[in-house]
Amino acid sequence: MAKETVRIRAVGDIRVDRPDPDSLMALVAPTLNDADITFGQLEASYSTRGQIAVNLTPGFRADPKNVPAIGRAGFKVISVASNHSHDYGHEAFLDTIQHLRDNGMRVIGGGKDIEDARKPAIFDVKGTKIAFLACNSILQPGYEARRKRPGMVPLRVKTFYEQLDWQAGTPPKIWTIPNPDDVTALLDDIKKAKQQADLVFVAMHWGVHYMVGHVAMYQYEVGHKVLDAGADVILGHHPHNLNTIEMYKGKPIFYSLGNFAFDYRTPTEYADDPYMIAQKELYKSLLDTDPSYQATQYPAVSRATMIANFYVSGGKIEKLTFLPAMANVDGQPEIVSPSSKEGKQVIALQTELCRNHNTQLEVEGKEVVLKAIE
Image (cartoon, rainbow, N blue to C red; front, side):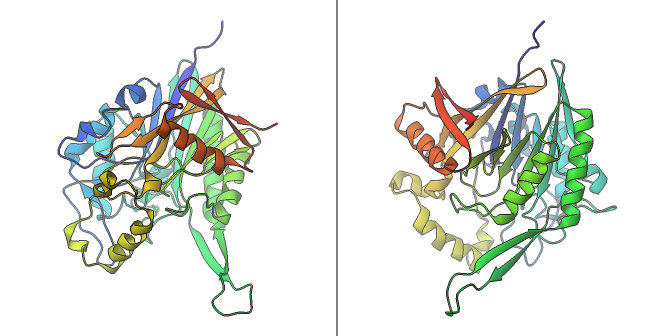
């Protein structure tokens, strides 16, 4: 008897923070709820407690009343391994995890200590076991979990700049070197999870934001090691824009799934902060040319997004696709037809990004099929 197909969906960064929380993902909630498992990456803490570190800019904390909307949108597993989940300290971080769990979601990538943070979320769906793990390369010092300290699973990376040209002021080569102990621990987690599950998905908060098409040196190294260790899929996020999808030995690495549903509200106390002023200057060169989108505070590169779909049967991914999507003027992600103007834009962007990464895109109805180039 043929095994039933398990449908898994995955998206990038989410932050719900608005008076009507359910409205943010109202247009995509039916699709997300239609899956057996839907994954998302959280970019905020949800608590009324905690205090931001004096030297941190900016910090993001939202009212816990927003959390139930995340569950109602269809999410079953959430990674809290982000560069903003710990902005308001241990209390707010642990509150966030508890609020997610209270609303029926499994949490990965963070916990009350390092042992708790490393635990996989394992789902048994229609006879197939799927494990999810998460780690973070974009974390402030002190955000990492320790033996008796809350935090996230770290994948720390050091950056070095090498001057290649003798002329002063020329661009350097940028070396990014992952912490070998963090890599070893992550690979051990993957091997243990693989002993308990048919498939292992690893969520990785990594990369450089707003640099479309850029993949840092360490991402290739770590990504390949993660899949060689037994993981089946890498779900990348943090850059706030789509990035390349690499098919490595037949397994997908989504270097960035992009922004998905993201309420961006800068606290007023940061209006004169040098970092925020610099961010506004960056946005000026990236903002959408359509004036109706200017009020969203989003650069145009952040509007294009996707919902990745994994069709699993017999313990294997039989089909891999994505649904192209765009954020509208209200910041709501909206699935767009591949034949529409915006759908063609997303597909054209992703086709260019996947060039030279062994990935072929084919439109099939409402979805875009991803295949490894033989």
